[in-house]
Image 1 (cartoon, rainbow, N blue to C red):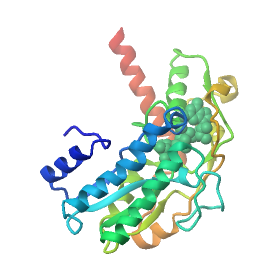
Image 2: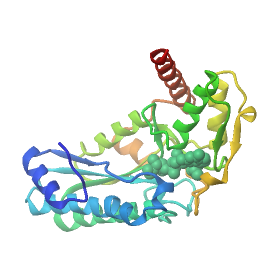
Image 3: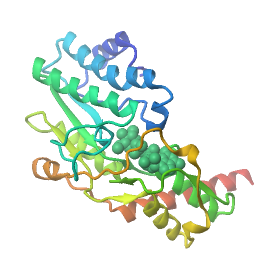
Length: 275
Ligand code: G4F
């Protein structure tokens, strides 16, 4: 089905047609840096998009039939108010994206409390895989490392190398989303690994995987700095562990290695096709 969460009627018609048991709202303008350039569009999709789906569930009288998952984000913690961040940590978003997601978070809780919808917020920290878009730093690095290793690129320009993130494997995190909707009572959960690394650490391991040294290839370009930066994020997944029985399976090193290896294989295939 085609769709767009800026179109209320389309959402209503689609839900009426598909009659889903579960809805996972992963729709978003999810690029933090881009949200500074298109803040109004970001709010329309990321904040009001969530409201439109909840309002459709309510107006179709499906509040007892559909479970709803809202993709919250660690970007809502922004300028962090405590370390590590838990479900109780106050939000301090640092981008139009983070601000819009805070609206999505609260409107989900408001519809849960007002209309008894089974609605959960997952507060997911950064989650990566070989399918990640090239606009995000992890994939930009692993793609760059693969190209440098294969001799078709000779430098990698990045922004803030000191930013720290709690990076996990997307496959593990999607499992946590599903677990949230299999419980008896809707609630909100932090999904994170509880481990933190800098962009520089990510580069070090990625270049190390192919026997190269990051100092020889990585440069800093202020074009990739953001008007307001989230310097550090570290989640405490304790509640998800206790209540959902969830634990990440893929380590940071395994994640970086997996992404570099997949990029090398993909680029080698592309080179072969071209020759
Ligand atoms: O990979 P990023 O663009 O991800 P960011 O901003 O943390 O957001 C991602 O994770 C969130 C979960 O916390 C999601 F909600 C969101 O939708 C998205 O998936 O940047 C990570 C860090 C930033 O501090 C950024 O400034 O890496 C830094 N960085 C340094 N050089 C760079 C670059 N980021 C990008 N995209 N490109 C660079 O060249």
